[in-house]
Length: 569
Image (cartoon, rainbow, N blue to C red; front, side):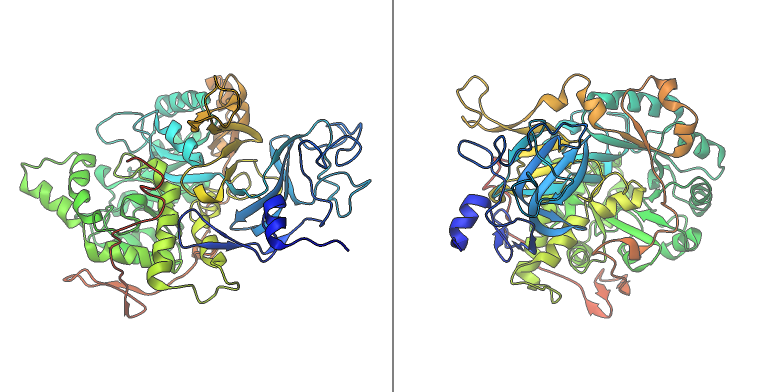
């Protein structure tokens, strides 16, 4: 039997089982756990390669016969559910068919009958490249329509949050007229959207109305009053109608402390925004809810990872985003109460042990939407450097840590909002929202963003030049972002009641409305790779955080990966 060295094989077909790949300039090594290839029968496209008529292509096999629409061949997959594997990824009718061995079963061994390649199939060779599921941002403030450009260019394909533009404090999109306009506006983008209404009402009628007219869920925010009565009412409506409640708690502890908020929640499922060190909520111990089983915790990216600059930049950001007046001492005290180096440091540790389950942007509400993905990997790399490899690692690399961190902006976000049947992983049957990366640029600059099975954004050179690769290479909108394509490749997520009420017809929508289901009864155990439930205590005097009795802290980083090496800002 002919053989080939690992080095030569990787150069031709990409890494195989047992090979490690460094992610960007981080300290993280991803190791291929399984390769679906049949050695010697790999799919390759191009001159003299295997995907030619009568060879890797099945002659006469039509789309009606089941031929793939798109094939990503020899791609390394990093996914919290599927794992870290290598294979051919097939797409048909905008959905993922499967990951396995593609080609022509008439002449190739081991071909998955679902992954037949023919003249109807577009092929992107991906040897040496990495595919991940499109990211979900669970904490968007839609203060600017231009957020969408930065989001999709960074690999975010689903945006969940509220606001209507540059209003005083952009929190929610509630009210039938308002959310209707946001749903109509969303048709301009090849991105999935879910809009949150306002949950701050101790009477239910306005809450029900918002859900029935297009809101995916509701958000309780301290700027509108996150009192126990409002929390209780909102959760009661959520349990009745099946939607997720997001809670930004009371920084000033005016209407109660964290214990009072938990009492009002009463063991019901809730998405706890700002389970973090400085983003808002009960001061100083909101971070302790990461140890409560019915609370699904997320934090935001301005404090992740903790660096030498984190503390200083937060005061001004807090003053602006909460419409505070620097001439009023009480307003300054409000801002200062939210910024605590000790809890910021503990936030990094809680992410690393899987106690904080999700990470979003808090876009223009102190966070940066284009840094959801890169800051997640900066944090993972920093934690490996400072805390070492996780004890549960099974290979020489960092697969368990990698799966933990990627789950924070993919599957756990999707499960929390009840949209995991559609997005959040590269499982069979889900929307083909796929981000393709060159390993050297992983986490910071995608190669391609495939939305609903079609290329919507990609790294493209000078279009007046002779080749696609002529510099400068810039992330640019591609054909899937134009005309009606973007509307058909994406969706808006709403409550089933809105669909049943004919909202799509009422608003004249072209983009599909998809139902969100199964948000009630979720618990920390449903947060994949991030289900830790430690006992968390915050010292009210020193702000030190103790996790299962041990001080949780880390040093601020003075240098990070995925930073100036890649960006000019």
